[in-house]
Each structure stands twice: as structure tokens, then as C-alpha cells.
Length: 478
Image 1 (cartoon, rainbow, N blue to C red):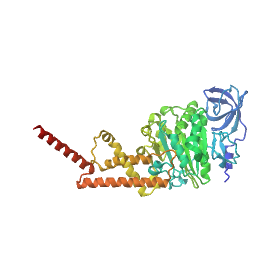
Image 2 (cartoon, helix red, strand yellow):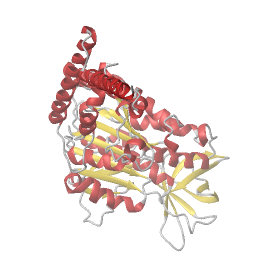
Image 3 (cartoon, rainbow, N blue to C red):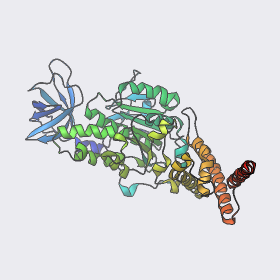
Image 4 (cartoon, one colour):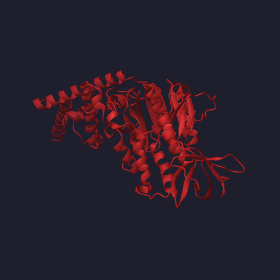
């Protein structure tokens, strides 16, 4: 299906005259231009004598001058260089030939492959759909990750965050989703990543299975801040293109924290006042505009996972706190679990999917509550269990949590090369919860009837043997 920019939208953004100006000054990476009244968001070329023009974008106005932020290396720009307006709105070319390819912020192919012909165009910066036009999220989307599908079920069109510190397996988890998800198309935005990690992610985490139905948009950490900010919008625009074709899209963005940090650089350079931890107000304005673009549409859906890199594992730092309030749930990765070799290192008790009860039947919901109850019971009594101070029979739920601890851990662990369907994840969860309910019921019945449990009988026999031994020793001494 061919999709072009709306002609009315194009006419509204076209300026009737050509604009040009000149470089007046440059402070840091911000260029101030004289005689260049271009609108905010316009794209321009800053001419250089010895090399190609520098692509730049209008980011603000100050003291009668227009402020531009370069997309490229600004070396060679001097006072008086001419500035020419290129266009007043941003768009990229799209099409099915994007699948299996790696592109940059401007939609240029950077993977060394052939340059295909793309016939469709879409705007990069679109407004989110109005709240009244959004259909309800009613069906689950399989991510291929057992712990998420079973205990943190995600719906088609839902938006979740993956919160974690560095080095606990965010990229590996995203790669598993891309490999095994039931979505039709995967769009991956790698924002501010180290250059060497791109090929590692594509070849090891994503693999050929995930890559063949994926589009990867990349802006590495060495690229200008504006490229890193625009990469998020480009990835979202491509996801919107496939959603409007009636497809279920999985949007994976790593990471929204680096998107916010890049916008912080731009905002401070433009003269915005810093607020919480140096982030200017524009960061907290752009975050909801970005994430609200994902969701379910009349014909398709965008299910989005945004990774949030928490500084010092502090989940209450400004970006994590702001994003958590914008999303429909969060998945918390635990460094403690990662240190134990438990992958994916998802802390179930610290994670939640707000739509899960509406997406699965009552039996699965109850099974989820049962497993969460056991995990909570074990966590609350872990210190006593480890030192041996806990007495079996004191609490049937704690007893069941101890007995099933290994089984629960086995369910939550999943190797990278191990796929899991939604049905398989559900069936295993139901079996695990049924066993837990049986153990809890048996322990509760024994406690109510006053009958000793097996552990209590063993302890009583041991105490009786010790008493008999002491009597024999006393008799021998006499």
C-alpha cells in the first residue's frame, strides 16, 4: 500500500520564498545566524569553502538571531558562511525494502548493502493520536520471553519500560524479543550506543531470524546530540508506517535515557535553564510526545519497549521517574539476579504490567498472584531461612516457597537460544501454580487439624533419640 505525505500537510509547511542568511557567531556547537528567519525545526545547509555543506536544524532564537544545531562535524565553519534553507519539515522514505536493513537518522542505509528504491514518504515528527480515537488493548502479544508472557503479560499496543543499570542484560533481553516475538515487524532504535555494540547486537543478540523482519535505526554515541534525538523520532515514524498498513509492530528503543541526555545537551546549548539534575524543561516535554505515539491504531498496533538506564541503580532518578509515569508498566532488571547468573534478570516483584489482568483469563491471573505470593514470602523470610532460624510448619506459604524455589527459578530462567511460545509459558505457569496451591492447602490443613508435618515428626524423633542417649549416658556414669 502506497503511503505519501498528506498534500495539505505539505502545503502548510512550505515557505513561499527561499531563505538564506549568514553565520554570525558559534558558541560550542550552536551556530547563530543573521538574516535567517526560518521556523523552528527547519533543516538548513551551512556552506563551507573546503568541504561539503554542514546539515543543521533550527532549535531556537535569541537576540534577534536564529540558532542552529549541526547534524555533522562543524569543523570548517567560519564567520560569514552562507546558510541556505533546505526544507521546513522532516520526512523520510519508507517501504518494505527497509526490512532487514540498518539505517541512520536520515533514513540512509549504512550497512554496506545496496540502496533500494523506496516509494513512500512519511513525516518524522507526527502528533500522537487523540485519546478518544485509541481502541482498547484487548489481546496479548507474545514476546517469546517466558517470564514476561506468563507473569507480566504484554498487550498489542502496550508501552512498557525496561529499567536497569549498566551490564545486566538489557540488550540480550531485547534480542530475545526480536527473535521470538509474534509481531509482524520489529523496529529497533539504538540511541547513543557504543560503535562496537551495533554488530554485536545484530549478529549475536538479534541473529538472522530476528534481522529478517527488523529495521534497525542507529545513532552511535559519537554522533551529534541532534542525531541521537532524531533517531528516536525516525524509529517511531517507521513503526507508525507499518502500523498504518495494518501490521503489529514491536518497537524496541535502547535507550530513552540517552535520548533524554542528548536533548539535555541541545536544550542547555540553546539557553534553557537546567532543572532536575541539569535536565531542561524541554526534556520532560518531549518524553510524553515520543512515547504517546506508540499504541494501538484503527488497523494495526505499536507495542513498545523503552529501556531506561538508571544511574547508580536508582529507580527514582529524574528520567526513570518521569518515564515510569508515562508507560503502561515496567520490567525491572536486578543486578543481584544477574550476579547470580540468573538470566533474564527480571525482578518479578519489582515489575508490573498494568494491563495484564485485562489480557488473560482468570486462571492465569490467579496463577500469577500465587507465584508472586510465594516469591514475596521467600523474600520476606530469606535471612531466617539462610541462617536456619526458620522452623518448618510455621507458615504454609513459606514452606511452599522453600519447596518450590528451584522450580520457580527454573521457570523464570531462559537461555538466549531457547524460544518460548505464549501457550507454553501459560501452561507451565499453571502447572507451577497448581503445585504451589496444593502444597499451601496441605500445610494449612495440617496446621488447622493440629497434625504434625513430616518435618515436625522428624524433629520430634531426633529430640527423642537425643533424650534417650542422654539417659543412657547418665545411667552409665552412675
